[in-house]
Image (cartoon, rainbow, N blue to C red; front, side):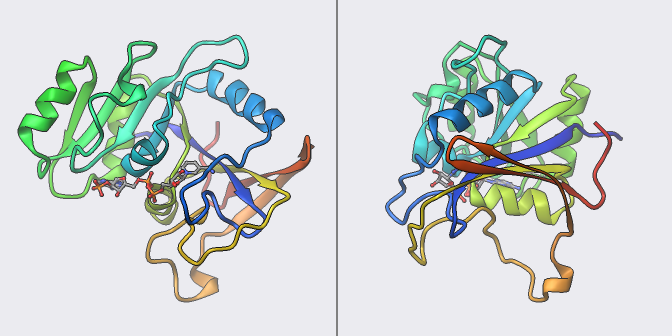
Length: 219
Ligand SMILES: NC(=O)c1ccc[n+]([C@@H]2O[C@H](COP(=O)([O-])OP(=O)(O)OC[C@H]3O[C@@H](n4cnc5c(N)ncnc54)[C@H](OP(=O)(O)O)[C@@H]3O)[C@@H](O)[C@H]2O)c1
């Protein structure tokens, strides 16, 4: 079964952090935010993990350029996001993916906000299966916007085709600060996900790096 073409987008500091140890994730420059909104407008859907919704409460819409809003998808195994989260407003369609382990009443409350609910068997959402479900709903191009845990789950399972990362000229440190990719990691560098650099450019004071993963699907 085919799945959407997946682009992971993130803004990180030179030391690889996508948020500070206090949770500040305002890393993108104005120029980079405009680039991100232009990219969003070209995508069928944008996907984030529950942790990003809880930390940042983003609306994930297109505001800085003219264009249509992508469908918003949240991977929220335990249905932890608030029913007041901005992604549940009615400015765009929203899909919340939960697992069977999630509290049924909470799931029902999320459904009542107008969100479409996708329920996965098991405690963890099978992300390959979820992407196939999204493809069945007409989603061909998906923008993955983090955070650290979902990025790891997607990348380590070979579900990311392209990475667009802007590097801001800042170093924030902090052992506990979230990095571009979290999770358990690989022990051996040789087992790490292999990437091919396809573009380097300047975006304001940031550097934009574009990579393709080795097994990338064609867009
Ligand atoms: N600078 C940037 O570009 C950027 C972009 C996005 C986010 N961020 C930052 O990243 C941080 C958030 O990262 P994070 O790692 O804490 O959270 P996250 O990756 O956004 O979300 C992780 C959560 O998503 C759910 N999830 C992920 N994969 C799942 C699966 N296969 N099955 C079921 N549930 C799954 C889990 O929720 P449950 O634990 O409830 O099961 C998991 O805890 C924030 O500080 C945010 O500001 C930065």
